[in-house]
Image (cartoon, rainbow, N blue to C red; front, side, top):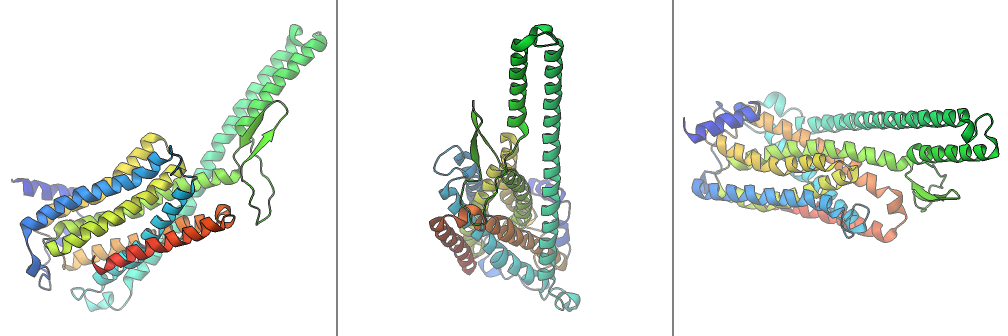
Length: 402
């Protein structure tokens, strides 16, 4: 058994036999449109170059916000990061609407499929809608789960501090030398100091201040408080909720990106046409960089541990190159126009489009553009809109070539 056969078997196992096996065994119903530009040696070189370029672009894009949070210029709370995230959100929105959804529609209305039901009902749009609504449910359920988990952790901390408070109080009350029954004024004073220290710990660990503000207030959401002997700052419940939202957003966004990245990689990997691969190489590198930046920004804002952040970044970076490698492995037996292949491609592209459109509009654009920070800074607001439209138009223009 030669290396190509082993690679083919590995590709089928990796995808669970879902995509590649769906494409095998069905004859193509139309001639291969790539035949005139078919050049396997040249295509192989371009696919190898595409794997490297897309890997580097994706890794650099997702790593930039993670490394940049230690730098003043592109830290997550800086304006440069805010503008770059708006640009990336526009790229993702255009990816869903202009690139993925039309491809899904083309696949599910292909002449190789039966007229009934495929060309009698807009399945691509319907599946994308269901995927978007499903993402809403996952978004809500994930946020609720992490909020409950966070609340349980805070309650456990409060109970632990309360137990410490009670034990110190009991010890101070029963010790005559430190203000017990006969301790006198000095004992009372020391007991008061001990009680005050415990109160400070409880306050610092579990207390959060909520400040009433008007709808149009542009005051900082985090305030420093002076308590006589010491000044300290507290995160608001709004800050905690925002962090939880970023945890959910980063995970759901990665799911949507990875889903369509596999499809894109397979499509490029099975192609034997340099005319098709060349424009895809540049377009996918651009697309992968900005998708990576948006995902890396969400991961950074979620505050994951270094190991978790690295795993998510690595998984995003290698998905499309792995898809290309899988496509290369099954290119000899893959029939792009077989009914099963078209249905699976159209289905997964529709799901990806629904997820990415929802995430870009709701969790990336709306979340930032209706925030207090945006309302209170007209210059940042104008620049963010310019960045958003620039990203969307730039990614849309790539549809002319890829």
